[in-house]
Image 1 (cartoon, rainbow, N blue to C red):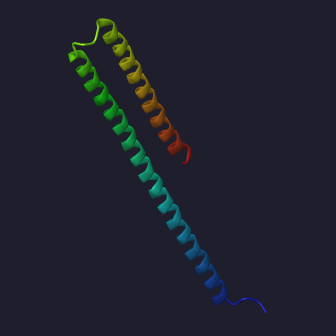
Image 2 (image 1 turned 90 degrees about the vertical axis):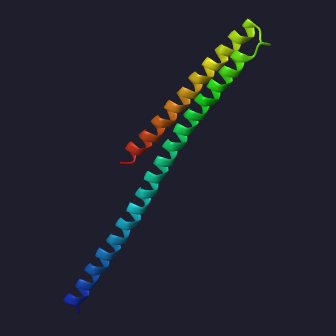
Image 3 (image 1 turned 135 degrees about the vertical axis):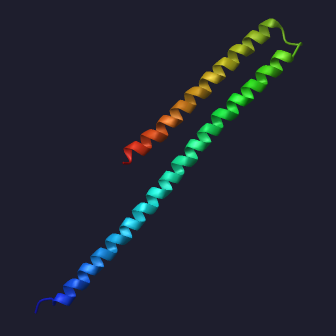
Amino acid sequence: MGDSERDYSEKISKIKLNSSKKVTEVLDVFGKAQKLKAESLKKTEEMMTDAASDLEKLERDKSNNKDLSAESQNRLNEEITAARSQVRQKYDELKARIFDHVESSH
């Protein structure tokens, strides 16, 4: 004996319910991914801002230090410039990875 119309309706309802649950799960995961993206971007910006601020302070302190020779000042200037460049490179790499990850998951 085959299934009745009611049996089929119950199966259809169950399929719709399961589908709705999956949609809710996917939206939850998507929301978490968006939150992680926002947190990652925030931390990346903080890293850049903090490093820039720290390097500027170091540069001012160095300039005010009368005990350093001109040669030492020049070497430190080069190191500060290299550090700025490295921080900028890491910042750019992080932002690119965050956006690449977000775009590849669409």
